[in-house]
Amino acid sequence: MWPLRKTYERHYQIGVVPVTLRTSVRSLVKTYDSLYGYAHTKTRPNPTIEIVVEPKPYTLRHRPRFNVSVNGQLRFEPAHKGELLPCVEWCVNWELPRLIPNLLQLHAATMQVGDQGIILAAHSGSGKSTLSTALLSRGWKYLSDEFALIDVHSRELHPYPRAICIKRPGYEVIESLGVPFHGKGHYLKGAKGYVRYVRPLDIRSDALGTSCPIRHVIFPHYVKNTQPKLIPMHRAEAVFELHKVCFNLLGCSSIPLDVLSGMIRNVSCHRLDTGDIQQSCDLVDDLVHGRILAHAQSA
Image (cartoon, rainbow, N blue to C red; front, side, top):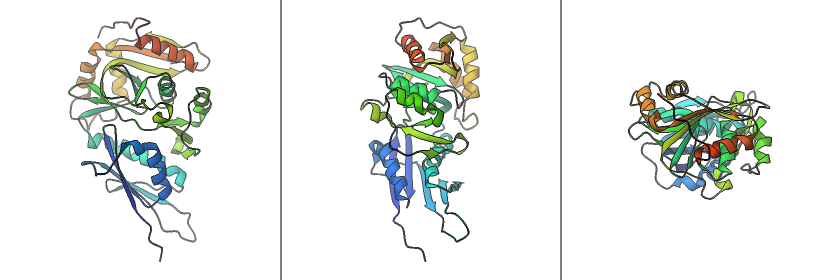
């Protein structure tokens, strides 16, 4: 018989996202606590995203594996401990539309300056996590590197300040910013390869933002060896592009196009060709602080 393992149960309120982690894998608990200990709550949120991670029994013929389930459904069967943290994060992503249907969910990094909310919307690999980390190091507030969570009634952005996930090609840029990676571990995130995490509170104690109105929508696109530039967009074009990066088209409690159309009326919209990270930040910083004119686009 296998020895009994101690099971740990932790509850977190990460911005507007409630998470419960139950596992006997002690190293996973320590890692998750080190990233999100500030969000720990003593009582179980109701409702919550419950993630259960348990090792499978060892056999002589098979390598050890793990079961990762979310709200009672098996989602992943990773073979290595280094895959567990990314799997837990994916489980939260998977359940968000079901748990909070009154939030429209876009694939975007989200930041805050004063009372202004900024959406950096893009597909994976466009550099939005690196850009948001660089802006955070300049004093911007952080909401999320993965989701724009938009209230379908108030049209405000809500925070989900998960740890910022940086893929291996971006390590050098993060180090050049003087931003510390959290811990020494590298994690395997499926086809994306190895990643490391940046904990926003390791950069500044006041790094986390709050719910806020949206004032700028920017679509970053990394172009190697290019001079960064901001290109104004018509609002109608921006709505179309945002619709393409919407995760919960079918699960949202309101019609996504209606939410986006209402949200975009008082928002400046730009494309951003990024190259040099510091010059890209200069452009965006000047736009948001009014040092360059935000173009008024017709719908």
